[in-house]
Amino acid sequence: MPPASRAATSDRDRRLLLRLAREAIAAHVGVAPAHVAAESGVLGVPAGAFVSLHKRGDLRGCIGHIEPNEPLGKVVPRCAVAAAATDPRFPPITPEELAQIDIEISLLGALEPIRGPEEIVVGRHGLVVELGWHRGLLLPQVATEWNWNAET
Image (cartoon, rainbow, N blue to C red; front, side, top):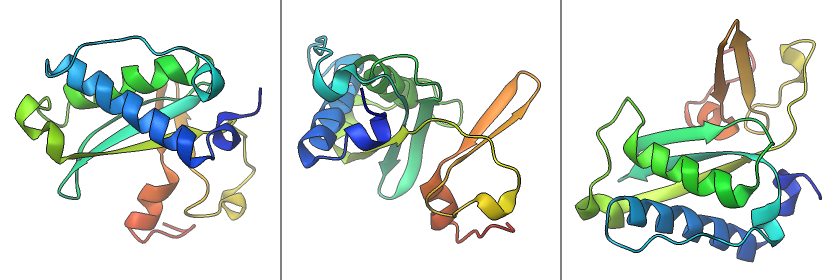
């Protein structure tokens, strides 16, 4: 199968993934029944993904899965629920605020080591930083939103 970053390029795929994320959160907060998505098409593509939740433009939760070792049909709903309920920076999303939540899904391509910062294209490349057992990810759009450049 193609990498997820290329696999989910159609509007239909994007709408499907966003619907899957919203339905998972709605089921978690108790406003909709839970259901399991079939793992066909883009939902069957193994990929990493991050789900970011915003309320009135402010971050409200963001959780992801870096490794491309599970299908998007499992990764996206799990990350959506985790972003809504377990991001330690925020209280859990309530049923009352669900309609005000905007969902953004970032699909991750294969991780590639770099030799230096000159290889980074700000706004296109994300960064995974590792130290021992700790690992963090900077999504490409975050650098752009904060007007960072390669030196930042």
